[in-house]
Image (cartoon, rainbow, N blue to C red):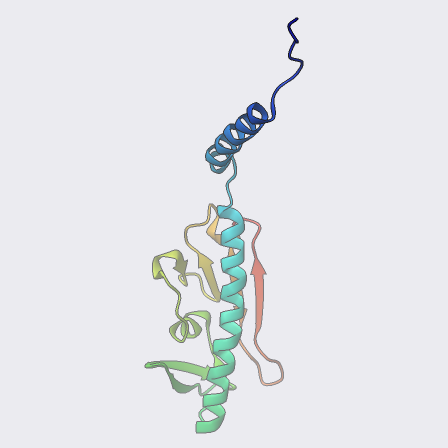
Length: 149
């Protein structure tokens, strides 16, 4: 008497699952675009780097008594670059960028005053860090805009 097979064997199920896994692994990158999230993270990293570089500039300016003011800016040498300072901090985003390692440099733009933009973003003006320089009574600020990353 013959027995009838009902269902699939374990090996057949494992083979099907492996094939589906391979197909999913090769097809998933075509459907998921993580570049926007990556650019948002880069802009947040740039803001942190701006803050750290400015802290270093401030420390050197204080140590060398080259803080400067809004009427008579000072200058501080950082990493081989001379940075113009006001109240001990960099007096513009482009000056601050001199003390930073923005690599690759083609990914970033300091053409707009007071901003470091991600040049490869779909809307660079909406993927940026805006820098407001220090005043006599306030430290500099860094405002992240990542809606266009």
